[in-house]
Image 1 (cartoon, rainbow, N blue to C red):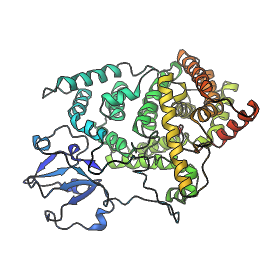
Image 2 (image 1 turned 135 degrees about the vertical axis):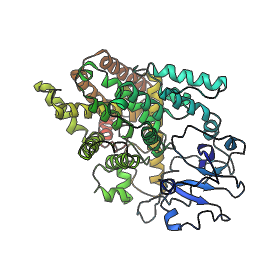
Image 3 (image 1 turned 90 degrees about the vertical axis):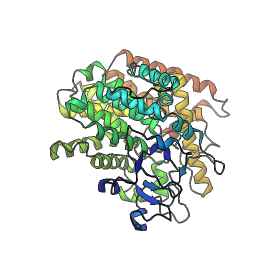
Image 4 (image 1 turned 45 degrees about the vertical axis):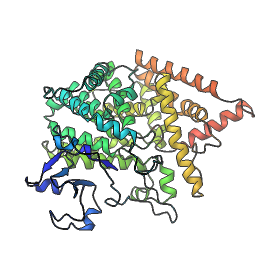
Length: 496
């Protein structure tokens, strides 16, 4: 479903540019429309509704111009209409003989017929707030006065950005203040903060379009793997980039790659893990031969958007390809099944004290470890934030388990709500995955931030332990079960 308030209005007497007609997205017309002739249904089936014509209102075309900062008055003078995307883009599904999952609606909740989700209503009535945030990030003056409430929200978001380097940064609050645009707003701010836009001579229109497309390609129906998670990982990455060892050693190219990798590391995540894709013979599993399936897909999706928006088209072709390869190397490092491989290499470097940040390959390896830490840092956040993330990821796990039960598939580890609890999942994850990684990171960067993260990790683990019901078996049996679960941790969990 797509709300028309996102679409600026183009008068019918203005010719539609060819690049708009051929851009990403579909063209949909009412049956009475012959404005551009009858479009080929086979072409429509490959696209998302980008241009739509409403026979009930013959005064305008609705053109989906991402990043547009001008909205015509006609748009708000009509009732809000919700246009369904169903029928324009048949969801790519696995080839399991009796299981086809529409990942766009996998985690969506049932809604009454004809109702408009409250989140979409909030996004509609505060669209001006998003426009204002885009303007102040570009330094543009406010052309139209906004309602005092909109100014208040935008002011609070701006104040939060001034403290974006704080480990206590509340990404949930920031997402509400930016009207669900936390990833776009945060990343634009960080790119400006590091001076990367000027240094790499990036086109702001292309940057904004790229980030909006990235944010849209996250499945925000997923309880955990959505654009807010990507924004949270990006904020954590910023905290690590500020650490003394990295701040004085990383190049501007390293910083740009680190931020882009954080922003896109879970792009188009379907809300299920790799074992699920393999057991249902999904086309992605076949495409990547059951190896780092999700991570390869995230990387390729990111490269596709980079090329579509031509973000680096002004750079030499060799430099652009090199950045795409390094971006892939960073994203592939988030594969949780390769955790021990990266951790052992990191530990060896620290034991031998041979990490030289003047060496480009060593800097890249440290960036990989930083992204891995950022990806699974939720247990190291303050309890109020950590608990929310734990509940969200467990909800996503259990929902997958319910689907597997429904279709009589083997239930993936940690996905059975009848045999696991949030506390069980989190304690095992903290003990066998998070603690070893962050202990080594603290050896590498022994700073106040590292000690703060380990302190929160210890307190949060104690809190989950206190919530556990008394086990009927011995403590040794419980620890053995947790260790087995952590070793079988599914790919694409809080962590990928």
